[in-house]
Length: 74
Image 1: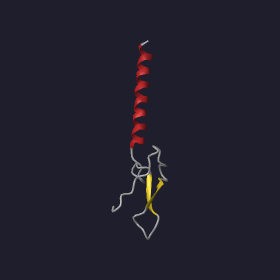
Image 2: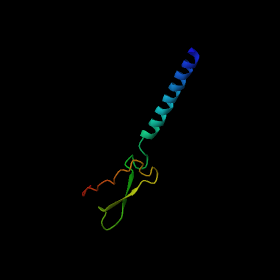
Image 3: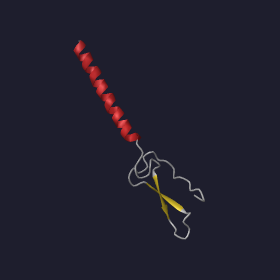
Image 4: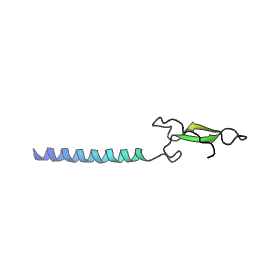
């Protein structure tokens, strides 16, 4: 009886390690948008302060974050 319990604990420990690895992989920000979910693009050359945002083509904004606001003068 002790052997199956020990095997169960090992299986539980192995699964917890797998879950931790999966969570760590998803917690890293996207290398293209740095976790924001949006990529800035300048839509008008005459008005470079006008910025349009497009959904990141690499991660596709998995958390459905709203587009960032453009602050004039920055």
